[in-house]
Length: 248
Image (cartoon, rainbow, N blue to C red; front, side, top):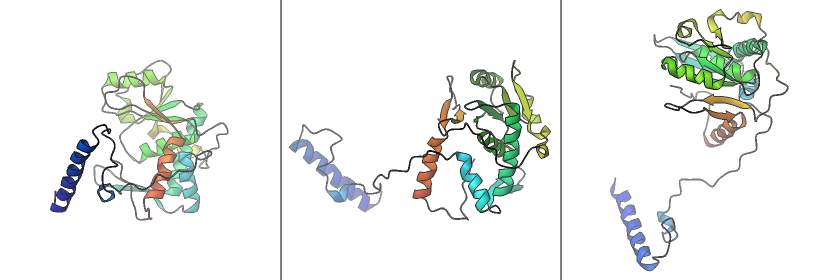
C-alpha cells in the first residue's frame, strides 16, 4: 500500500471512530458520515438493459456469419501447438449440420444433450449445434470417474450423448442412451442452412451444468439469462475485431 492509500485508510478509520462516538445507534452499513472524497466512485450508475424477448444465443452468431462471414470466429491451439481457425461462416455452417443431425434424432426443447469430449473445435461446434437444435447442452468431463458420469447421465435422463471414439470407451452404457460419435457423423448429408425451430422460446433451457462436487441436480439456465450478460459486456467493454476471448 502506497502512502496515499494509507492516508485514505487512516482518514476513513478516523471518521468511523468519530461516528461511533457521535452516533452509536447507527448501523454498520451506514456510511453517510464519510466525506464524499472517501467514497468509492469506481462503480458507474446502474443501467437498465433492454429486455431480451426474441433473440437466442446462437442468433447473434448467425447474424455475424451473415454480416461478416470471413471474420475469424474461433482459433484453437491444441496440445501439439497446432492452430485451427474457423471463420464465422464455416463455424456456423458446420454447427448447422450438427443441429440438423440432432433434429433428425428427435431432440426436444429443454432436453439436455451431454457432450463428453475434450475441448476442441468439435466441442464448440457441438455446443452451438445443440443450441441451434433448440436443446440444452451439458458438458461432461471425459476424465471424471465412471460413477460420476453415470450419475449425471442418469440424473439428466439423457437419451443422446455426443462424444468421440476415444472418450466413448469410458462412458457407461444404460438403457435408452445412444451415443453420437462425432467422427462417424456424415455431416455432408445435412443442410448448412440455419435450422428454424418454430416452438423455441427464450425461456427454454440453453444449458444444464454440473459444478465440481455437486451431488444434486445441475444448474439450469434459459436462453435469455446469458444474453443479459452479453448485452452488459457489449455496453461495458470496447470490443474490436482484433480482440480475443480466451476459454481455458
